[in-house]
Length: 135
Image (cartoon, rainbow, N blue to C red; front, side):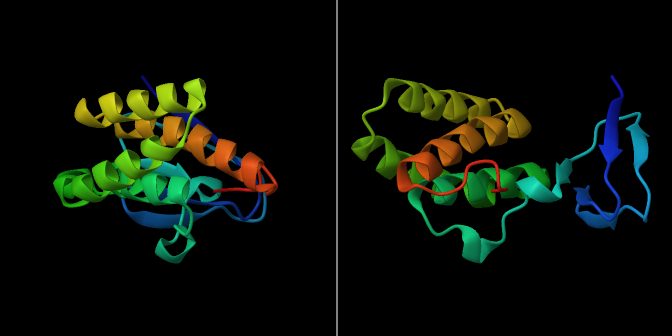
């Protein structure tokens, strides 16, 4: 199934590990086959993984972007997820954590990334950060 990306002027994204930037006008791309695509707003640098939920998100993002080496990031994901789940009491957030774990086990890394994104949003809300301002 093709994936259509609608890009804003200057918007960047990662496509199979390569950083690509749109020109000065809106554009649409249609990807006809499976590819790892991540929009700029969903990309996290290693130094931005500075909260418990972000420390879960980051290894999932790396598994998605570097699927051939996903095992390299798995232990970090499990450790951080376990630590987080030991202190969080919100049933929906715990369900998202369990869901993300299942998705990672099934190698559905993009789905796991979007699930852990909800966990980051929850944490941002609890910490009083602006939600929706990027990961």
